[in-house]
Length: 624
Image (tube, rainbow, N blue to C red; front, side):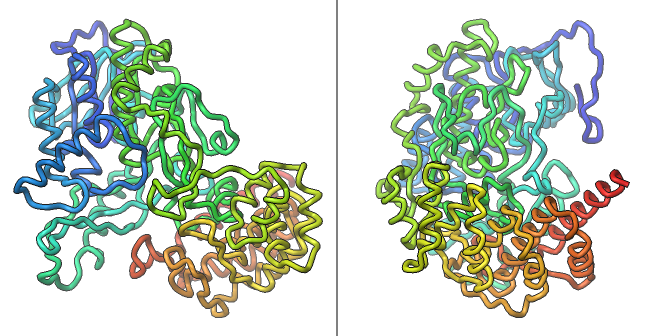
């Protein structure tokens, strides 16, 4: 298979003899790939590493993301970071976080010592297949077009570029509603009081598999005022913009064992992990109304955005479906869009590369396919390297504190009295989700609590819990919350808590409440009535952003109601269609973490509205 104008094209080749053959070829020497190449070489494998840029380490070096946000500890990366810190203390320029320049140096030094053959500025353009096994790859670089054979391949390109090239199955990109992926960042590096520091802000959205989009993102983000202010001063001197964007999401392979957010929440966890990924559901999108129902149940109805989760990642999640000698290391592994916001942290992606290399070593050493590896052969190597550490697995943590050792383990409530106390509190999320897990067993109690008048929080949060189970008994209280435009913001999560007023609209939409349709249409036309009263200053920063939440949740509630009641579709099309099609239609939200950079959501809204209206028209045409 080879790539021609972005498309994989099969080319018949007979009896290919490679002049060079390696045990393992690692494509991409970024966050996962550099660690994979080093680990494999340390086990005595003959390794070729191909990198399209000019250095190793990816996001943590070229990308200037020098700190760690969660991820679980243990493995080769910690040894490397320790060596970097030692060098940082003996006369090199001081840096905040892990010194990116020194980490590039340490990685290269170790690769030289381990005997890894490294080729920079080389892009893979083809792969040789025999059945379901990759025989070698073809690339273009400074020496022109070259090729080499391999026994195993690790695709650590970030977007499963090689897997896409030879036709491995992929999940549909982005979130289900509109294919939108997580925002990207573009770090700036500056010198502050003689210390090199990196700062980033989310810079917009890009499909990096499209070269024109990627080019525009690189150029436009570099010119943003957050990166190039009118002037710098002695306290902050511009050094450089990161040569690599901070891409959070791209392709995901269809794997031999897919790991999904639903699996995690329903306790369907692997008993044969390579590592434990660890983070909260760190979705950077402000348009959470357009995310999946499950993600909104978690982050909107229960405000559990900040709860951290440890996720066991099995070998099958790294193996593209149907292939024998290919592994994917890095953020393109076999997860879904929802869970990817948790399973993408640098610590974990470095360990993912290490685990992939150890799996390749076991397969090569045992002359077997990856799918036939005995986990008991692999597990001791994972434990020995520290890549797998059972103490990293604790289920979920309450992350109100930013210090890991101060966080408390989340235990789902089963005692109804304890759930009642939680629902009556200012931090109701754990109790709301515990009620969801209890199911019908607690519904009689919830119906009793939702009708009492003594405790407003208990009544309103019980309605949330009932709504998550599809119980219409919640509707009267949810209408009350919506009509009041309840400004209460729970404190369940350390940030990204959701306002109770628009969260109730989300739940009324799930329940298909016809009565509220006129009121939702009125909300959509009432921008000037919304004044920001949210206390979550990172999620909502100004009036337009506050209105956007009411607008987007009302829009999606209307769509859900119209799916059950087609009679309201004409009114929705007339009212919303005329509004969003107006040339001056615009709604701004801020990009995380800055409060100064606005992003217009009009294009996203128009796309979603037009797609839904086209779907309805197609359904009507089919009926008639």
